[in-house]
Image 1 (cartoon, helix red, strand yellow):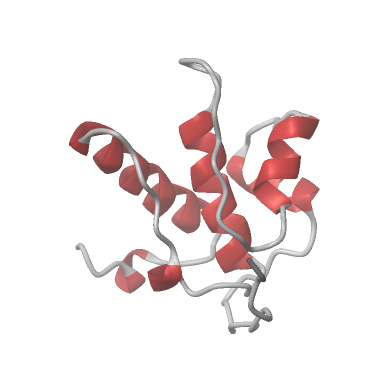
Image 2: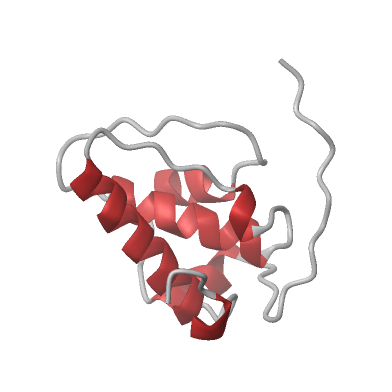
Length: 111
């Protein structure tokens, strides 16, 4: 399976460095988490134990991809096993996008 070429989207506060993302979100990601977050755009699966930071990494990956202009927010699909987990992921993504200055509450179609 080949990955399509990356199209850069205009964002209000572009990210350029993983350290910048860590600072904006206030989260000290491990090297493994940072590698997942900053991997090239392609489908990914994150498998880890409970409480290991999977949801946080998924939310940060969305911020990274949107904040670096690699994808538009409406191009992201996150899959979970339960409606509760989906709601939690959506809330974390929304909060992280706002915290990083990538989107504003006015950009949020759910509000």
